[in-house]
Image 1 (spheres, rainbow, N blue to C red):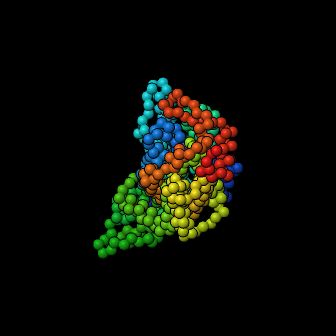
Image 2 (tube, rainbow, N blue to C red; image 1 turned 90 degrees about the vertical axis):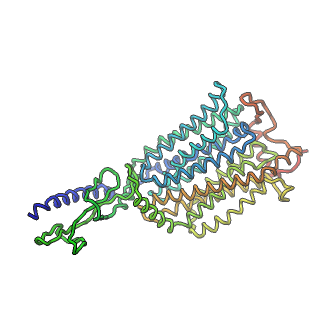
Image 3 (cartoon, helix red, strand yellow; image 1 turned 30 degrees about the vertical axis):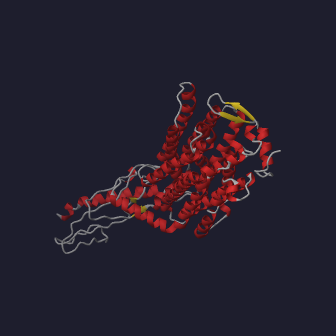
Length: 549
């Protein structure tokens, strides 16, 4: 009997209908609700702390450059650390983009926090306990390996946060970027404070790293509390719903999809039509026997295909899926390429100059304090630039033009690192600080606008992927900029201005009260806060090369 033979098809379809209804109910759970509110801006603050947590480990190493330069005086510490961090971060962000569907954003962020915290603990233990108690000296390579591990954790966090906040309103991407800038400001002030109040260089560095660990733990503890908020769940749920598709693959074996295991799923129906026709009918009723020669007809509707998972579970990687992922990424790139190129150029220029070249600008007055002051200028200006981002609504083409013009800062700052007899160009501390402020302000402004505007050019289901792709170009800019800075450093090393200062009599602020650091073989220079502040203020109105009388 035809009806008896095909009865399983009817029950199979009924089961599919039930599963479809339940899936629709879950995807549209928020449809009848008004938009949830971010009460007291708690979610916004949490993502600012998330941005701080992304970069505070890296900034801790860079701001402790005075310690590492004392410990490894013959090595280009800042350049090597930056290069190792950026190259490792670039490889990591490539992997993160390929595996974004395999591990949930929650798992990736927690993993990044975990290895970043463990590495900071390792550095503190190695630098204090091992050298003081065990008399074991850490090597230069060991510190670079620690930086590489930090890069893995921080980049996983950073890329995941950008993808996560791309599903939220634009101001939450802005929150992450403001947090990244605040990480630089916090570490700058923390480093200056520890150097002010703790004379021993190693102990001050240890306290500095411990402060960074405390901030990192605070950021990690706050993230899970906001992840399950109604505000987050609403926007993440909306992005999930927008990825619902209707798909039929009639050429493979029949199977039903388990929709509730958060994995890829597709309904695949295999039919055996007669040789005279291979078409499928989508008529109603679902099953119409019309005699012995009749063929089966199927009504296929609302087959749920969960495209890319964002909240949990895992997916199976295969070549067709990879090909489809690449096609999707190409389509997104065609829409937002001006923003991608702009953010690449912005961070290429920034990394060519900061932190490597900025830390090499020498001051006959500031001495060893000059790198820290240059960094705090940059980080403070960068934060201000990111805060005022929403006051500017620049298009992709305008950003691209301004990014190209901004590259003129590279030769301008190089003039500050070369002694005057090589370039015939006036140099002063104030001019160097001005370059650093302009670099930071433009970085904050022109680095934020592409990250905020690019996802808004796309549909909701493409925004998380767009955020990860923007992070990829951001990392490409950082990587090529670091390589550029390394090449610049190699070419200007014989022409640094320190020899000029040694040939004349200057009162250096860090040479007023030398003392012996008994934990290292080097003599460490110290002073009081009042002396530092007085000399900084006076240097802002005096040129760098006015000889003392």
